[in-house]
Image 1 (cartoon, protein in one colour):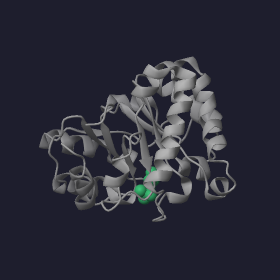
Image 2 (cartoon, rainbow, N blue to C red):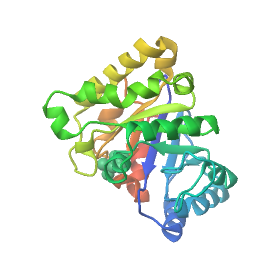
Image 3 (cartoon, rainbow, N blue to C red):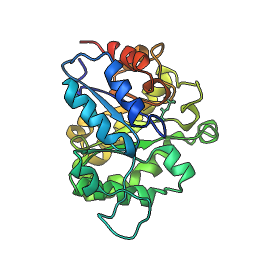
Image 4 (cartoon, rainbow, N blue to C red):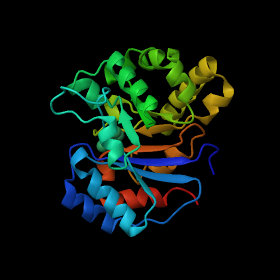
Length: 256
Ligand code: PEP
């Protein structure tokens, strides 16, 4: 078993309304595994159905939101706040996904504001970071990841939360939804350097407690190899989280 435990998280993006969500959880093969956690991030509209489905089936699956607004209420048309999510029983939020950065203009400053607000409101945050293919080819992977993390590491609220309510997902942008997975060696090298960065800034104890998930075209055919790497603490999965068979197969690959 991994020292930090294993997290298998599914990001449904803009897929699965309430009916499909209910059907997914009905069909999902799930058995409890010590030291491992399963989590799904459905769309806002499917959150209540997802919670009801897992609770009524007695499946210990965590449900989180894919985004939220940093302010608690106000004139922000189309947005959803932390207190609204908590009212329905949501205490997990995914932040900084590359699609939020790319399509919705979320800068490191916006993501930092959301992260701090989420932590202050008692959420557990999974923060996504990752480089583009051009950045990797230019040898800038480390510089990009450091830039994406540095304001978070410098913030006292975030720094204190790393390893307890703040964890990371390393998602190379070129591997998301493309079928191009980082090799286990590439992923491990990046995860190890992220952990070194965390150790240098936060100290060994906090750095050792941070779960670093890998994301980017994870499937049942590559997950076991990725999971065998020392610094990979689980997966953040898009496409393969949409079908109960493939997500269940990923779960079954986690050693009991
Ligand atoms: C994601 O969206 O976070 C992701 C990793 O997607 P996929 O697994 O489809 O590459």
